[in-house]
Length: 386
Image 1 (tube, rainbow, N blue to C red):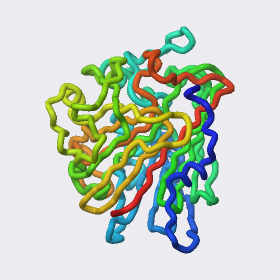
Image 2: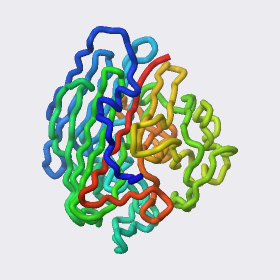
Image 3: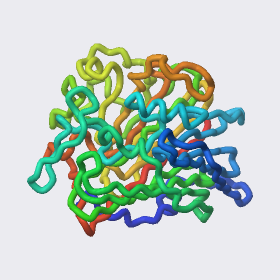
């Protein structure tokens, strides 16, 4: 099966696969857009607000395609933001100027690492910026997270409230070949599912790996550690790395390692394990190979539950991998919306994507995209309480 085979089901069907029959009156989703400042180089930025009738609110900014906030009720109906972020544009542009921890951002052209910043396309080797030790991380010095996206359209339909953003990346951008046109549609459904639908095309052969880098804390932004949260992953194997976080090319079983989340397990139980993989990453920062067939309908990749608030989130995707990252680089140097400093293990990221460094490993699912093909993937974050 081609990795970039079009996703046949509509977004409505994808979200409907995980919908709940709520037994309530017809919901009325809403969407609005307002100015949200200008970048240091003078580009205007907007913030788009998506709402449903269950007190779930999602805010997306056109700078970096960033998910700025996700507000959702706990088991008692108390609404809190559950993603880390900033209350104004300056917080994001200052982070970008530092090199960036990618708060809530859309990542491209190539999410995760490329060995030595190099990658082959049809026999020719290309180079992008070295940004993480000896390797490239998340698309070079000015990846998709540091661009202002075009607000293409907003609206409501049978799936919920949505916004579509567009970015045209010219040939040679950050060293990548081909002019790439990317659309991402964020849809907040009446079933409390936030769907991210990525579509991209190119005019020349290239490589592509797109994801979102939101930092989640189901007990609430700024509330402290996610170690009590309970995680389960639908993945029997992972891609081991070397000391620079590059995959070795192997696919290894998770059984018998701290990466085994086949059963619900508190994140903190093995977070400080002396396992070599854990020591390399200083926590969790690995790619799990999601069970099931990728490139078709989204399947369950994982779920996380916070026993303090009762909030639960399922992650569904038709991507082949899921990078799980326990915010190991947060060191108290950032204060978020709440004004509280963000520290290590204050959040967890679920980056549904292709495997790291795939262009340099022929045994991994291909990330090549050619003219006439469409990169078409969906990731869903679905919220509930118990």
